[in-house]
Image (tube, rainbow, N blue to C red; front, side):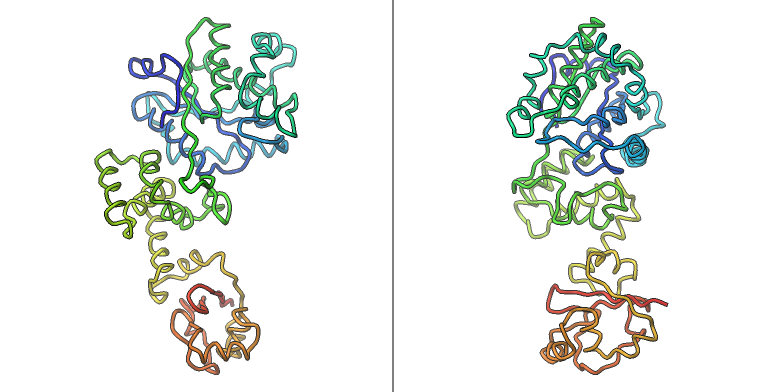
Length: 411
């Protein structure tokens, strides 16, 4: 998990109890799997007796960090930032212990001090310690200056604000270590430099590798979009599936990054990737560990039951909730129970959109290509009733192996 660190970081962590922080950008009401590596870094520090701080950027979020960005971000309102900041804590509580003493995790918000500071005071006490040459040399700034968009003074000043955060936390709670992704190196070192200049004290920085996939795609992105930690944005089932679909080339690295499994267990799982890749034991373990950690054992059980439905299990054994979870992105239609009685099989297939017409539906049924709750339909005129629905509420129609439609029975 270590990409780089300032001189003295290793010794400090070995010899003393360190207070360390990582900043989280409140650009959304949920963190995502791209935030998991820094979250796990704080959690590991806490397990070894150090004190973690999760700093929500309620103040810096008003500006926007240029690191890793090719263009200026859209500025959010203060109300949006504050609402997002509040939503993040419940997700962090799944990984960090905010009660454990004496090194309970703390969540702080830099809005508490940055929104109160005056411009002239900030320029005098922080800005004067940085030359423009120093700031221009930072990789995040150089990259933007070389692009078509350039960089605004707003985002150019972000480095100073982050450095000021480190100084404030150093003074207020004795924080001596800032961590983040490797793209944050310049901002973190700036904070260490500021503490050295104005307090004559030693403060360290440690950066983590940026998580990538062997296939070259962006980690945490799927065809459906970002994988969020909020269950309302990404269901536990889809979260489980994301990890289950991990590439063989990535799974050992992710087991080391994101789980609490010991080295012997990870080595054994790595061996299964080579010797029996078709079993996907390493991916299944990764999915189980992460889903249980974030969503709990109950949601893990549901996700695994639903996964069996998706990959060949009997729909008859599934609950209505499992069916709706697995097929929540499948086109769906609704019918009242009394309406269903007037739809023979071919009419229902056409109504659900699995065929363009009753005639086409009839042809597909005669060819043996239509299934109702995984049972082949053999008579195009056969009546479909509520008794055919799973739990009396859901019918799953399938054409071939993959093309499905869901019919929901409503009162």
